[in-house]
Length: 309
Ligand code: CP
Ligand code: NVA
Image (cartoon, rainbow, N blue to C red; front, side):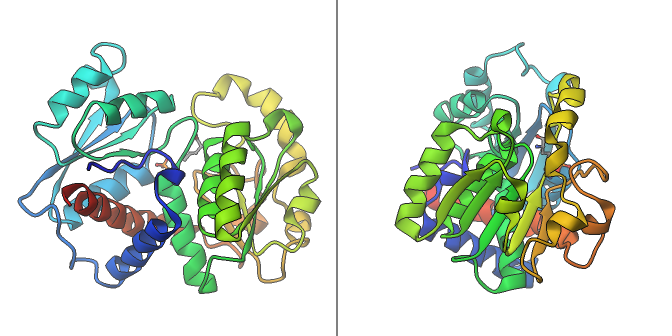
């Protein structure tokens, strides 16, 4: 059966561990895994801008023995010119997998429903699950384990990163706290699903409005831009509402002394995080960015193997 990766809870806790273990093995032996030998082609489609996702998928697909085909919506028939269902049926005749950065999650679901090849969410308005595989790989590298650690996500609780943190950390048996103003709280469906998963993994889920309470004693502190792609018109209102959730050295001081700082990037220093934190000794953002490569190679290799069996 074809496996897709559209949201973080598309994989079980055991499957998440399999992918993270494979990511570590691939990182240690970069050229040793070649499921795309041929070369087979993977379509990587962008409706939104990208640096890390574009480069890590292009390099990763080549590392796996394959050939990346980077498609921009503007210069293809997607984006309202041709239906997603028809696109899905054309692509499956030629490519081994489809990776897509888009707006609505429903578009990814339609693509996955219409094709026999694995579909990967390379960021939607609702989730950024590939980023979370890289983030979990990074945290595990620095801490040796995931289960039992406490993670605080600060800022836009309704964002793709917040939602993916809730689901992926619950899956990993971590304690995830989101610190966000009430008008930026996470989706009720995601909180409820994360809570349900946490009950089976020994993790926990909390949504708090007090940033100090959210960060208190945390092992990992995470934030993301306050203005996600597509929200540029809301910048002034968002900056005003989220100002109290900036990860400053003072806020970071409430976390554990050895707490890690993560940010998916791109970062806006002086807004969601101060330079002293993101460029300081607790920050692991460059390992996090590199791990996009290893984690996504593992994900593609894993999806292709599972879909073939
Ligand atoms: N973190 C991330 O997805 O970066 P890009 O937008 O550059 O791909
Ligand atoms: N939340 C951000 C993540 C960018 C990688 C956005 O969607 O723009």
